[in-house]
Length: 114
Image 1 (cartoon, helix red, strand yellow):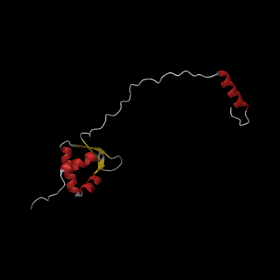
Image 2 (tube, helix red, strand yellow; image 1 turned 30 degrees about the vertical axis):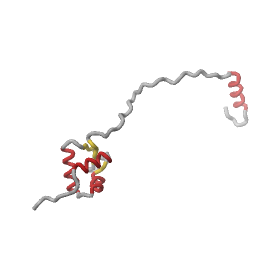
Image 3 (tube, helix red, strand yellow; image 1 turned 180 degrees about the vertical axis):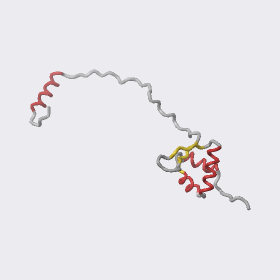
Image 4 (cartoon, one colour; image 1 turned 135 degrees about the vertical axis):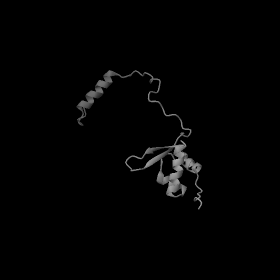
C-alpha cells in the first residue's frame, strides 16, 4: 500500500508562516486545508531543518506559535539609548509684574481658584 499523497508541501507551509508569523498549529492546518497528521509531520520537518522556530503559547497546553527562523526584511528595532540632540533652549520672556497680577487676580476671584 502506498503512502497517502498530499498537495501541501513544506515550502507552502513555510511561505504561510513567513507571511503570517506567530501562527498557531490550528490556523496553519486550517489555512493549508490538510489533515492533522500531515500538518504535524510537515511542521516537524521544517523545525528539524531549522526553517521555523516555536514558542509556547502562554497558558495553552501543548500549544505553540510558529515563527520563521529568519525574519523577513524588517527595519531594525530602535535601540533603547538613542542619541538625539537636546531641544533648543528658550528663555522665558515673562513680565513678572504681569504674572504676579495674574496670580493675585486668581486668588481674589470668586471661583476660589488659587
